[in-house]
View 1 (cartoon, rainbow, N blue to C red):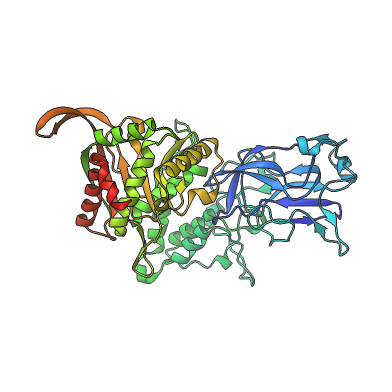
View 2 (view 1 turned 30 degrees about the horizontal axis):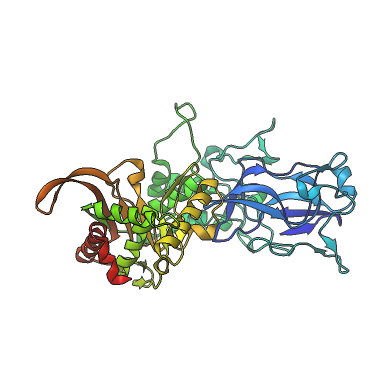
Length: 487
């Protein structure tokens, strides 16, 4: 992810952060130009769609350049910092190197603590610190200009030294002679839009950096084709160029003069929006619910915590009930392979739980929840919750769930119809536990009552299975001794 540009300076690029992530937003720079850094010292904190990550630099030396301001979103492979590995770096930085962090103390700029040059002229650094990066070369990636994001412009109407894309005058499409080699497109959405409408991307000249073809370029081409009466869509789909143009322009226009505050839909909020939208599009979900008397469960928890040892949390007991119920109704611990038209029943239970944080809603995953007791579940819930609030969850701790437990009772509400966490097949919702009138042993009494709801993918099972699962959960809540059958 780095290369030596002049024999003394190394350009460190945004590494692959794993889990298929392709971009990250700069949250906070941890170094300044002129700082001395050591091998594997964190230089920037970035936010991906899954977590906050401190990115360590695999080279030691003097920081001579930073790329991107805080709040800027960069693709994987974009330059982050340039590090000078000898005394020339201090001069390039504009003066004597400043110390940065405990690791930089006493480190002279002329003797960096990493990135020693080997006999073949290549530079040796720290190796792979995060997924897919270290000191090895990687294919060059173009910096993306995301459609709709504001860009700082200069007197000549240029953004960051490049001309901003503008709609062609007179509705003409910017075209070029077809060329051999890869088409300069990064976004799969742009490729899909062109493919769906039979538009040859090789005939377009991109308005982005280095000729990058943006979505705006494709939409302009479709509008121009519609204006000429041309047909640019797949004939089998029955969509004409006019219909395509209408589809890309039919959304209500919101001008800059409209009142209100614009909040970028990115990072965690954007990831949540994408996942929930996909769930609603793909999963035919249904919800059933039941009220349960949780008085005995609360008494059982009190008795457990009075016996000494670590305290047992309520959510851990509910999780233990969930894993027991999934063992009896494995249809709900599954996913649907739409391409193969198969239901995949999963062997283990990796239990996700909804956690509200300052950065938005996240769903950490307790691995192998079916193999844990209440004490182990309590400890893992506490660890993941703290990491979520501090923004320290790794991508691996936010993915791979097979079933989700959603305790929305902490918000003071009784019921909900949650959206399934795609690609899972079900989610159990738990409302607040409050004193209510209840018929107990034939008499009216005040009991601790909770509403339980189950949202499930109707493709994996029918109402009988879903109802059986929910009824078993309610029975365990009302009579915790039912769990003894599975212990």
